[in-house]
Image (tube, rainbow, N blue to C red; front, side):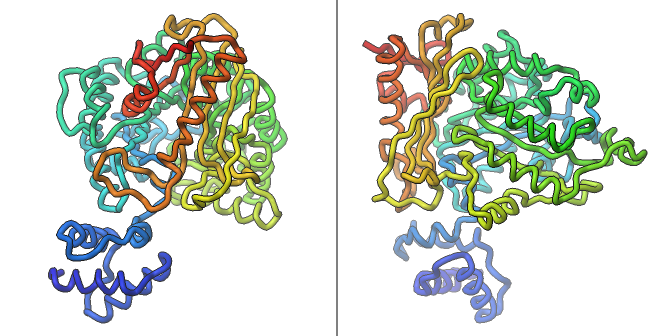
Length: 527
């Protein structure tokens, strides 16, 4: 498209004062007809818009930017999510439901979106991240704060030298330069343009021990997702999981005592389970102190040709729930979720054609459930359903809420800033007080902040970045929560030290609050 035509379209776009994405689509079709050109993509419009802004040929329009951003939800949780896939490698598990596709990491299929991106980049973590950052930038998303999600099966089973090189390459990609070693790359990332504020890995509970926990911290990991799948040993045995409930309980305790955020993968509709057991599972998760996950991924069991379960189904030995049964079950489950838990996902990101039969084919399950619950007059209390996102009202009065609960031999204190009705969550903090002997010396006699997060449109860290008109980020809510956590630590528990399991990219933030880096944690003495 010629420059004069680009400018004419952008000027017309600004003059049209569009209100939402529907208006934008009408405008694009109108321009297509007017100039006899293909319908312009949001990415191309955004690219032209930024180009003319930089040349000072048009004035910036923040409202227009917001509408042009493709899939704005990607950065409305306050961070830009970047998923990166590990290389194909054997898995110690032999689970009935788990697919095995040649040339793919265990449990992943070649037609899943994240996997397709990894294949294009030959599973090279550096290339995956570099290309993903380019894509997000073209779509209009700030990429200052990166939450890195490492997927690809059991991370802890991969060779140790591969793990170290993989994570170093991730840091090198965000730093834009090569470092001598992982520690140097992490140090450089503290002031990088793209800062990794958290790293998540997937693993099995039977692979978590004290040695593994310490290694995860050296790599910079801050959150661990575990394939718990069920809290019943008979179901785990039948599905050939290779671990028992006691492994899940012990792993959860070790991880929480080290400050990690813990995400459980739970699978309703497994062979040998039923609707009653599945519903009871979620009641137990939040009433039994041995569990209490911070986050959940609920993956209804899916029948895939590449999994052993396909044969059982073909022989009539396994029957999936009906769509109505699963929908009603998930609605009952959502009613049980407490304010301090976030449901990350409600189905796996497996394309519908790959699922042979059953309600796991419903790819927009979250939207389906939200529509039903709204009609019934209730809202899910989970963190994700209450995040403020774009529904930010600068003058709205915020309230500090506190919820204490027992978990894994300690006390969890969940602090949050929300509106009065608790249907808009602005900021949260997880504070842990451990009552058991701490196996990490630096954490002895210390409270630990396991999470600090402020929601809303991602606010750029780097000076000169575009700043959204309205965003709860950088409004001081995080600092207020930290101050409250320090006060609770000192006054209520008599502790004189507080630690933070900080992502590498936010260490500077804590240094400004007088925290110092000691053995991968940010530490502050309380006098």
